[in-house]
Image: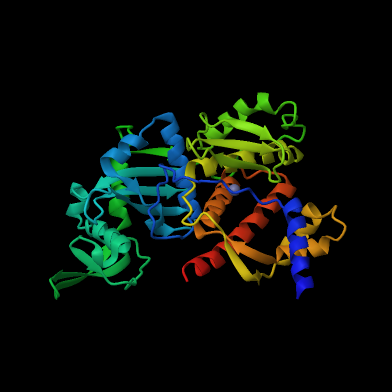
Length: 417
Ligand SMILES: [Zn+2]
């Protein structure tokens, strides 16, 4: 038994040396733009991530989001309801917007209509004439109910699961809604969301190009993007990185993350590619790049720095700062492509690579679920907005995403115990 423990300890030691995981930001803070509420820990849909990145781009061109928040509140992205066909990307999202000082009720919906690479959006409030005329105002109640359950102060409550789900044009996603007086049910009706009515709203009235009201914009990261030129000699290294930062920051801003005010520094003694550090006293963030970053191609480096920028702007705070120690450790199984990635790119110069791979299947501590969710969102987002990276870095991203998704699932289970 003692020998086994020693083996784990040694393996852990080497793992730290060979690890490619990101260092953990010390005090990740909730970002205002994403500002998610606390209830749900689901990972965001890729379309939603693209919409967020796109709206952030809009905000960096015409700043509107602070005013939007003052007027309407915070978008609760994780409670977005999709409607339409994902495959052909003809899909809409109802994103509830919640103002903290109101009762437990949703009075604003940020409606997004995504067709191909074009995003139309509109801020729709409960008193919208056409929504009321077509009796679609129940959707505000439905979103309120989804978020607050029986504590919702909206008039109509809904039965939990969809009653019918029809793909016919007008009627889609219907739920039985109930109106009660006290304990007595006085009304029950099938309510169906009509996408066409909502879509109509985004078409009729967007002459006023004010993002607070609505608009139309190309979606970010819709494929294509700049292919890296093979003789690209922009690659960052220990002597040129400082001059290269302004250009990279600009590129990252075009991709939807403005990190103008966040300093970037090169540090020694860090084993990851780059990391975010938050100053304990001031709360200010900085991005630290590690020497390992210089082993990557220029596009990879851009993607890695975009990833850190995404953390700076979007991370949700952790519900627990300290990891949970697992005793006995958790043993995970690993798909063969992940093992191949580790052998080919991570442990290729270790004397006994198989032993390290075995070590990566032993998980001895778990962070709280938000940690994994932050990583998953950052990796998914960078994969979307910087699609053309080297084969090596692409494999690394896929591996990390697989690992964080798996561990995130375990973490949700363990922390909810
Ligand atoms: Zn990360």
